[in-house]
Length: 328
Image 1: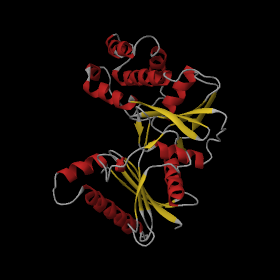
Image 2 (image 1 turned 45 degrees about the horizontal axis):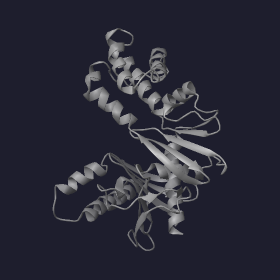
Image 3 (image 1 turned 120 degrees about the vertical axis):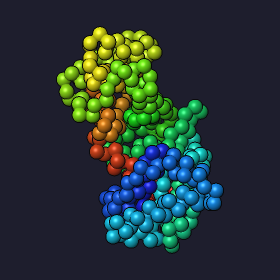
């Protein structure tokens, strides 16, 4: 079992990789927009087979497609699936693991289907982690992977907060080798709702050709981060409208101002602590945004920025470590 099939099945995306267990090298990859949400809707439209069998057929078809497109043999290779596959919309709902959660992956909540992909090749579906008031699915694999990649050398006597930006940003507290708490912030989702469905939709215009390195974009974003402390977010959000009405920023640059307000408000929930380690773990799309915002807010003297290109690799390393910990 030198290789395993690692599947990250998210709400809106599907990613399957054939991965070397020792080096994390990806030998073959298949990407699709057929996430759990779309698959669930397709299953609901039919009445012939069970939910698990419907998802399983999709997964087996994807494994076969990956093999054919890359001229590789995927028989008798174990499969591990993380993300939303273990949710109430996924292959099979699996209870969450609970806190404290050891970041070696040994306490993960899983369902194992033996001989799924051939001899000694099980399917392992990994669930997420819950606290008393919050849940996550997928970020725990990324966190485990970052540790495996030695991107963060944990001191068991120190406290760490790992920030995973996104649609639903996660702030994960780690101490003594355990995840001890975490909080979810709907930063990305609120940005999308406000810019597309609220009164602010007429005050912002998303233009992907404008980057944060643009001086005006940077000024708008910085203003948003700084103004996020002025008052309640319910008030400061309305300043996005007035910034456009009064000609402070054009609609294109006003989107950066809105982003700054929301990211600034999210990060301000991390109370300043000079003795705590802050680890920003962002993909390419938001890396500079969170780096600049955290520099402005000066939340700690110990901030580590994980390079954006390592986040995908962290997911792979995390899935491999989960497989190793659970299979052994």
